[in-house]
Length: 120
Image (cartoon, rainbow, N blue to C red; front, top):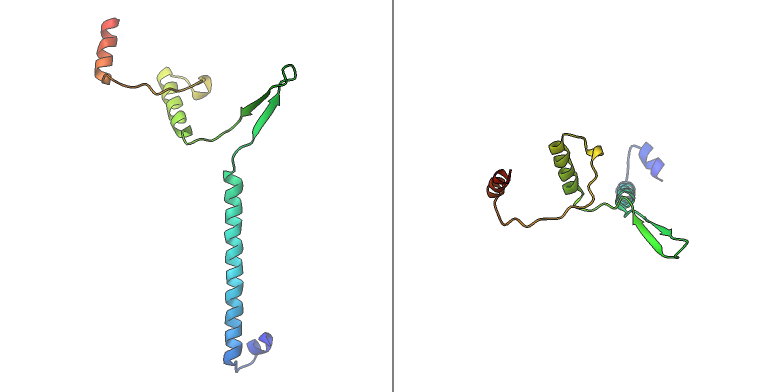
């Protein structure tokens, strides 16, 4: 019926509505499948990293080593590592940062610099 309507000169209203509805259904299914593909891609990209469990044979204790755990403070760590490397005049690969702690600042940087200059 669709093929006859496409090749004939006179198309009825019913045939036109059927063709339009079929075309809209095809577009809807394609868009829905694209949406699911984007969601699946985001799931695989943003899934949490697995933790490797290591079991100590002597004591029988399980130790969990977190590898490549991404946190929101990674950008801050990268910036601090770059600043330390620039200050030391070396590359980031040559330094190892074990931990970073926030220090409460009671004095201004100017007063700390003045104290350090008098100590030397």
